[in-house]
Amino acid sequence: MAFAALGVVFGDIGTSPLYAMQTVFSLEHNRVQVTRSDVFGVISMVIWSITIIVSMKYVALAMRADNEGEGGILALVALLRTHLVAPRRARAVVIMGIVGAALFFGDAVITPAISVMSAIEGVVVVDPSLGDLVLPLSLVILTVLFAVQRWGTQVIGRAFGPVMTLWFVVLAVLGVPHIVHNPQILLAVSPTYALAFVLEHPLIAFVAMGGVVLTITGAEALYADMGHFGAGAIRRAWYVVVFPSLALTYFGQGAMILDDPSTVANPFFRMAPSWATLPLVVLATLATVIASQAVISGAYSVSRQAVRLGMLPRMLVRQTSREEGGQIYVPVMNWILFVGVVVLIAVFRSSSRLATAYGLAVTGTLLLTSALFLVLAREVWRVERWKIITYVVLVVTLELTFLGANLTKIVSGGWLPLLIAAAVVALMTTWRQGSTALHEEERYLEGPLPVFVRMIRHHDIPRVPGVAVFPHSNATTTPLALRANVDFNRVVHEHVILVQIVNENVPHIRHVDRVEVNDLGDAADGFVHVAVHVGFADSQDIPKGLALAIGKTPELDVDIDDAHYFLSVLTVHATGPRGLKTWRKRLYAWMYHNAANRTEVFHLPPDRTIVMGAHVEL
Image 1 (tube, rainbow, N blue to C red):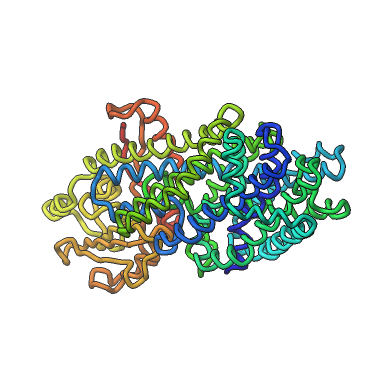
Image 2 (image 1 turned 90 degrees about the vertical axis):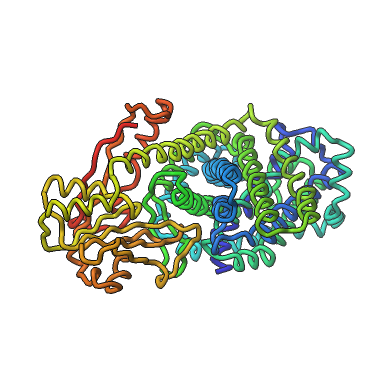
């Protein structure tokens, strides 16, 4: 699993050496001079940023805050919603989770574009006339990457594992000769050089931090991908392979820049001898494809968690592994990301321009994750105050500095992740508000279930042979499809089973604990309610859940292979008197009608599923 994790989890942070140092010394972020004090200061900031943010915050601390194995900012939200009783605190946690997830999606769009383009741009080092090939090659490679996602992250990880292992070996090998030639660069491991750089050139160091942050991109994806491979595998791969290789390559780049200041134009590819540049471009391209995989996999996990937490409409989720519940493929998210990446490449046309847009999404997500983690540590884990203060001084202060440095880049491209995040926040908040309004109207239309059952007895509605299954969100109101069936056909099936999917704030529910049966007060009326409990990493498969309940009571001694499923579906119109603004009503109605088909989501047999419902005006 550690080997497979190398092929998926560390692609983003592992390819940062391609463009991070180039960005720090580029004209857009310049005034950083190629002097001993400046280079030592930058390398020291890089090493300690990786140590504090990735090794300490994420690998050592945040990965302890897993929700039954699942990680990421929404896993933190789920944990806190379970433990925080005060409604105001719970709402604040949800809002932070929404903003953090929105920023993560912004990162997930930018990462594939900047990573692949930065690798392909290496051909310009070989031959400047090949620059026109960068855009078409980038588009072709990314199209293939998004097309193969359906095969699953485990298959991709096995294929990419050897490539990424070779990549990290090459990173170390490239750095070592330059370190041997100028071993003084190793002194930059002391944080005093970073502090001296800050004190000597505070404004220059502050601006440089906007480039240094690129060395830690992928840290949040690492956390979000925890459900795919497990914390232990990720920790072993980080400490044994990834961190040492990154340190050696950054030390090597620093040593080379001191020896030859002209290499700042493209320090990564200049580290290699001229004969190795073209093979290195090929390897770097493969590695950046893997970097894209890290955030794509993370985006799948975050989107499914968002759906289960009621922040986004239903999406079709395909399980790609029988052993690992976290390994999934979300088709709609896959193609949304692909379209976004293609648009970015067409608009920005170079990795250096995209670099100005990159850091803001990363730093915003870092800070929100820290805020939620601190709430969890203090309110739930009851961690001592001095430990909280130490975390704030070391981690939060550094992250605030990163955020401030990247705010200076809003005009030159930092607006992009903010725009993406604002769009996602609008979608999430509209879905939450619209769903609340719709559920109120839906419950009014449905009416109490006990009253409906008594009405059937009182009017002596004929019962016909067969099993009718009604997926429904609760055990207290009447499914609209059941009402419509009685009104239209004037009959009720002999066996009526209401099935409720109960989403729990944990990733997995054991099969023995998954179903709960209730005869609704009268075992003789043929009505029974089955609650199927699922975690946010479990499939919402109603027939399989129902199969676990068969035989538990006499009312469920039926053959579900002959059962017919009746889905209640509402047609939503944005013309009602509800309190939502008109644009939110229209947006919600559009999302509602474009949500995943519940027949597919619930794995219902299409030839035995009937859709019935009503019209609702919001």
